[in-house]
Length: 434
Image 1 (cartoon, rainbow, N blue to C red):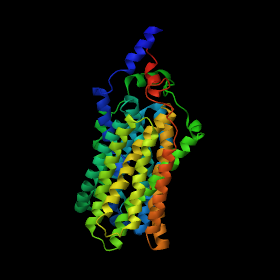
Image 2 (cartoon, rainbow, N blue to C red):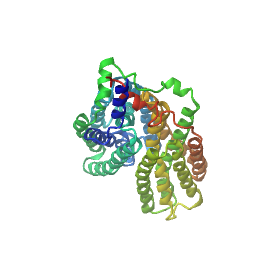
Image 3 (cartoon, rainbow, N blue to C red):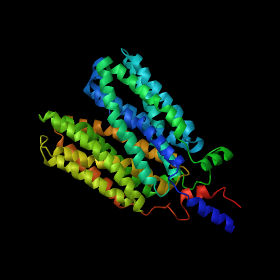
């Protein structure tokens, strides 16, 4: 018995920064880069006019199409999470990435048929629900205990942030050469180029894989609650309300603030600066929240990010759209937008464990995706009713303050690093016998 305890302690004290764990981190970064956060959202504005003109969707129709994609992705996400829990990351995510690349290539042949274009976009939405952050955050959660928050933040910041920089530039050049069809085809090739790297680098710890092979499913030694048990707790719904309200609000701001500036005759430079500082703030929010989550054992550390974003939305109601200070509101909103992903994955693992992490986080992430698609549509409808964005900006500020309040009231973690109930500790302790 003593020997078992000593071996358990040795296993838990092994260094986390190893060649294999860092390879998995690079693999997760590649996954984020070829994922929907980089492929679907950043180039939307570049595709909107040529696609809407081709099929007669109009300016309102294209956002509704993107809402459809979000609904498909959000609906499939919990099912994908459950499959990842049962069969492992690689068996689920690699086929989804391949199919996503092929689906983007298929859009090349939909010119002239609105029905075919919508059908393929629906398929892309469903595949986006599989190819979501659940897989990559799960891999990193299994490799890292003490550095979990920061390593997830690095992978998301470099992957999604890097993709957000590369993809729009690539799409813009391809559309200029061969129109929107070549733009989508280029995205398909970009995704498929990442597949060999994912196959090579994205791997769960060997001990975890061995247990799944032995029992034919997710190892029972991973502790945590089921989705049904999680949903029976107030903590789950506090997290859901905070993240859904923030997702809808922040994505709506990112879509409509440039239009608000343009409607008032503001310079394109102010709008571009707003989007640039939004992206910069997103990277800072991802890295900052990840660093703090690993050092302060409380979810309350996420609350200030929502206050900062609420203040940014408040600035929009107080200043004219031509003000040179408007881009700083983008920086403030971006910090919360970036922090969201790391906060969501981290608090799910700490409050509900890793046994059903994929299914629980898949449900939460799915709701966030649907909210991010609905937010711009709701703000657009509000603008049509009021002929003014200011009421919507005010409501956005209130929603972000609600997100702050929910995180500020969250209880202590249930699965803390280093205590006897830590989900990763239990995973590693199994199979270490004398």
